[in-house]
Every structure is written in structure tokens, then in C-alpha cells.
Image (cartoon, rainbow, N blue to C red):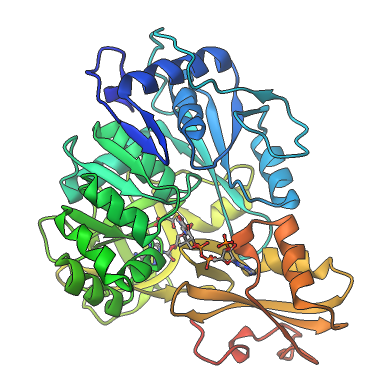
Length: 469
Ligand code: MLC
Ligand code: AMP
């Protein structure tokens, strides 16, 4: 059973979910989400505009109860992105709020409706969620997540982090990715503890959640960096049990800063949309700055270079492959891309380059492809932004890269050859078509792009030379 604590006979829990100003007891959640389930029963796939609201929580939980696949859509998505997600996933309607200009029908989510009907537990192989994630080129790919994989991934984390129903989890991460949605919402619902969603992950909001009794905090490195820079607020987090970072590398100075102000060594974990979390430091184990820890229970990892396995000696650098029960089994509608990354025998090629110590500790060195950018913890494909910019009349050639950024990890910069027009216009053009976080922060106009003899843009020659990859 994916959500045992939501069975109608589970004990009530006041403030099971607090999201902004909205408070839902467990009884509210079960009654209202079951009422959603009644409305949508028999549907196959529904889209949810995943704003951080009680309505989004009820829509997702209603889908889980009714065995309807939910596709969370980033609420700031542009036209092109929404169109792609809806057509690729085959969404039949919007559940809850719909974006302006929506053409699909809308099914309302009613906060105060109640049903106590008991729905049968869906098959463990049923697809609960389809999450969209960027590749190096083309539109985002859908990753179908089964109930079995989600349950296995969450239980492996509970084991690593001693995560129980006594924990109150706090975070303010988006409700359309593995981090904020699966770990951050389905996680506490499976464990049975409280969730405080702070809507935005600001230092003020995290300090307030700590004062309200949160024991466990999730953040991407940008969040921890901003908290570390606000020591008076950060101090409030000293009383927590566990601070967790993931979705991008946590720089060692930020680890040290958080330790200095809170007394906590941040637990770092490594994962992907396609695999959920596979490696983490442990609540009861060593937290080594710059290292992401040990494989979770049930997970195997290997390092490969040119088809050969590399030793786990803390020095050999190779492609990281992972295998475990929390992995998805492929991309939706993309057998080509699936065959590239799912290698057979359950192994998945992460695209990340790593070293493994003889004690099993993993360090992520970087990514194989320069065309995948991580900015603020969001995965962004350079190719997707380039395609949009090329459709702008002023743009003749374009190359998008991620440059190192102290706040965001990487920041998106577009090198453009064309008829100079205002930078803001190009940035807004991207925002119209894609999500807000895919907008370049900077446009650099240039006479030409560096190309090799084959005519391929040499991105390593762009930027300030310190880019990864
Ligand atoms: C941003 N802004 C821009 C801009 N880009 N303005 C002009 N041009 C651009 N190109 C604006 C924003 O809209 C915002 O405006 C302001 O600048 C600050 O933006 P920001 O620097 O991006 O900060 P912020 O909005 O505070 O966002 C930071 C953040 C966010 C950390 C909260 O990046 C975030 O939520 N990240 C989480 C990503 C995540 O959950 N990833 C998980 C993937 S799952 P205004 O007006 O709004 O202030 C995964 C698996 C795993 O990776 O392992 O977990
Ligand atoms: P996403 O698809 O958004 O899930 O992004 C997954 C990618 O984020 C991984 O392939 C890594 O490159 C990166 N990532 C996630 N967690 C970490 C971490 N703790 N350290 C380094 N990189 C990470």
C-alpha cells in the first residue's frame, strides 16, 4: 500500500499538511482527496497545474487514491512546454486550476467536499505520476513512475535517514519534481508525519518552520547557500533533527557554513528523475563534505570507462551506472532515448561522472554532457532553449551554456549571432515558450560562434573557460 496512513481508519492528525496559510488535518486530506477520487474515477491521465497549494495536494492525493495517473505541470510553463506535456502524456483534462487559454476540460477540486468511500489499492505496477525532465536536446521527456518504485524509493530513504512518523518535514520546493513532490509530499504521507510546505524556500520561511517544530528540512544547494548567508535565521534550524541537500552538488564551503551556524552536518543525497534517490549519506553515518554517500539499501552502483568496470579506489573517474527497485523503466514514447540510458539487466547510465572510494563513498565529479545545465537545482537542456531562440527573428545562430554561479550553481548564458535587439526581449521570448527558470540570465552578442572542422559549436571555448564538462 502506497499511503497506509491515509486509509480511512488511520488516526486523525491535526495539521497533517500545512501549505502556506492552508491547514489540512489527516481527516480533511482523506475526506477531500477521496471526494476528488470519486469525481475522477475511470479517468486515465490528468494534468495538475502544480502550484504550491492545498488544491494541488488534494489533486495529487486524489489521483493516487483513484488510480489515475497525474501529470504535474510547472505552473510557470510557457506555451510550447504545456502543449508538449499535454500531448505527450495524453492528459484528458486539468484537475483543479487550468492555465489561461487552456483547451482541455477542467475538473474542479473542492476543498470542503468529503467522501469516505474506501477505494481498492491499485496495482503496484500502476503509473502514479509522469514527471517531465529535460534532456540535452529536444523537448522534455516524460518519466512514468510506478507506485512500486515510489514506495521502494521512499522506504530506502526512510532507512537511510531514520525518517519516521515522528518527523515533521519542512521545505518550499516545487511540487512537480522528484525532490519537492515525491520526497517532499508523497514522502511524509507515506511515513505518516507532518508536512510544512513553506511555498517558497526562503531563510525566513525555514526559520519559521523550525520554530513551528519541523524536524527535517529539504533544500537544493541554492536554498542552503541563502540560509547560510542569513546566520540569525539559520540558527533556528539548530533544533532540527536532519538537514538534507540534493538535486545539485552542495559546495563544500556551504556545507561548512551551515555546520558553523546550525551545528548540523547537512546530509547530501544524489538522484535523478529517472532513478529517484540512489545514493545518500546516512543519519547515523559519516557526512563527508563534497561526497554524496553510500548506495541506498537495494541499490547497486558501478563505474565504467569505455565498457570496462573501474576500481572503487577513490581516484578512478568513470561513468556512474545505478540499479535498484526505485528506478523508472524508461521514458514515455521515447524508445530511442530509453535504449540509450537503460542498458539492460536493470542498469541505468546516469550521465554523471563519479568516483567511488574503497569504503563505498561516492563523489559526483560532473556530467558527461555540457548541454545539461543545473541552475538552482532545475535541470535544463541547452538544446531546448536554443530551439526557442532560433525561432526569434533577430537570431541567426545561438549557443546556450551554463556558467558557474555562486548562488545558482550554474547560470544560463546565451551566445547569439544576429541582429542586435534588446536582451530583455529575447529573455522574455524564452519565458513565453518555456518555464521561467529556463530563461537565459544573460545574452552575449557575438560576431560568430567557435566551431570545429565539422561545423559543430565548441561550447568549451565559450564562457570564462571554467565551465564543466
Ligand atoms: C530568474 N529571474 C529572471 C531570470 N531568471 N529575471 C530575468 N531574467 C531571467 N533570466 C527572476 C525570477 O523570476 C525571480 O523573480 C528572480 O529573478 C530571482 O530568481 P532566482 O534567482 O531563480 O531565485 P528564486 O526565484 O528565488 O529561485 C531559486 C530557487 C529555485 C532555489 C527557489 O531555483 C527553486 O525552487 N529550485 C528548486 C528546483 C528543484 O526543486 N529541483 C529538483 C529537481 S528533481 P521574482 O520576481 O519571482 O523574485 C532532482 C532529483 C533530485 O533534481 O536529485 O532531487
Ligand atoms: P533531475 O533530472 O532534475 O532529476 O536532475 C538529476 C541530476 O542532478 C543528476 O544527474 C545530477 O547531475 C544532479 N544531481 C542531483 N543530486 C546531486 C548531488 N547531490 N550532487 C551532484 N549532482 C546532483
